[in-house]
Image (cartoon, rainbow, N blue to C red; front, top):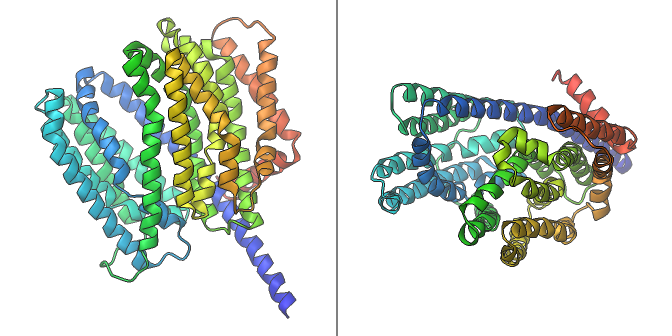
Length: 494
């Protein structure tokens, strides 16, 4: 009898895991599509508003958003991540998290509003007082939808989340354009931002089944707050370590060098984050439902980084080998000094998307304290490397960044995997084929003398993609994962 029960539980577990992977495939496709729509709206906003507003209008908003972007780290307190990760989350716990979100959003709003006179005085622009006061209200608005968003993520209902975000971005664009046409100058951007936040939050309220109750005691929310506090502390540490390179270059090298470095970083990292973000957002709630010591946890993680490596490594290889064409064709001849920075940062971009998924292991397994610890170690070593690298100028910072990322790869992966079913060899075997095929494509392309231009850029892309596809087809594991991805996408009608 016990053997029958064990057999049936294994079947149920296999079916549950199969359903989870099917939801993940569908959610991943929806998240990537949503990201594409959002980026298209942002590009449209940039093109249209650039013809209606002045650089000074954008600069006025940027002066305030430099402060609000930092304050935004503390708005959520990591409570959304805690709600997504928590197994057996109760209605009382989520209601308490909702009120904590609102309370924290209100506290941050008051804090930012109190800073309004100081911001205006610092920049010597009195109009920034009103702009800061209005934008501070957005913290309250957005915080009210945090737990509604978390529940939809937890249930992997990414279609509803995408609808809310796309509607918010679209409404922000429409309001900004209408206000700009009426001559509201920088207020066009302010009202667009406020409208986008309000529409997204309103739709999350409508589309999410979560309805907050009154706050209550004894719901066991303290552990969730501790989890969120560790996540927030990590974000705080990570914020400074990831911006220290720009601070040092701006202080010790100059604005020109910072502009060159910043352009190289933005142009390289943006497409990688565009791919990593949606995949991570789908994988986190899925892996949070699994036992970190189970084979399913390991299998899911391997699937995730295999697909991510297959998408990002060939792309980075193409950008590395085509650095000159990309910079000159997209930015112009005057930006030629960006090329060496772009090439060095590509060394970081080659491994960073898959290496960065170590945070996924720690958070989905509930190890937020260890998540903070590895962030502290990474920040300390990166800071030391940047301080040493600045003596060689901006390019020294770029090399310090690249070498640190590779130096920390093995120890931080081992630390994240400790206590789980995942082994470092799982990581290596999952990225082996994309890694080798991308490296091979760089070697092959470097043997030929291509004519400069769009045609050369496209031809290099075709070669990298072809070698990547051949490598994937010759890998039984990747071939199986790609087949499952395509078949599940078809079965879901995507």
